[in-house]
Image (cartoon, rainbow, N blue to C red; front, side, top):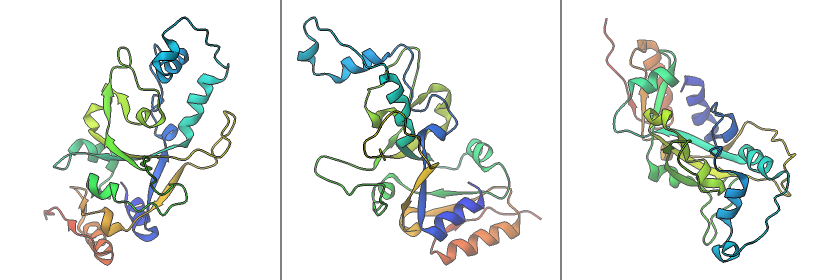
Length: 231
């Protein structure tokens, strides 16, 4: 991420979760074309209801409902690996004045749901879902038609990202297909030192930038990995 996003996390003590439909990939949260609305409904119904010949009349706006719900699924995306990735620096750093923060699945799951957009845990319900992306072939594979699983499926062309996600749902009361979200995402309150266990600076960063990041992180009790700078 760039330095401003890093400063945002530290100064606001919040982690941004983007709307699923604004991540830049039109297939985010979408179903394969072969997995029609009728297929999805049949998969959701108990088997005893579809064992015999039945007539199912689908509402004309059903497919639009699945599309509209993508606005209310919120995600935080991470690269999962034991080492830094040159490819990830090129894709998401985009300059020498960039940083990467490191966390763990356990730290993500321990996020305190102080945000009004995440309901405190109740029996049988997990409000924050954390897991790896499953990369699938949209011409052959299918996606279970629930809300959460859709956020953990991407096309195989993204396999190089080795993505881990934290996901939560934020459906408005009395949801309808015509509702349009008035936000680009939600923030969830976090304590930076609880979420982040290390900060890495872009490999080609100038000494002044490395020093700025180090001092900023130290003010928030974070450790920083600074690459050696030649010259």
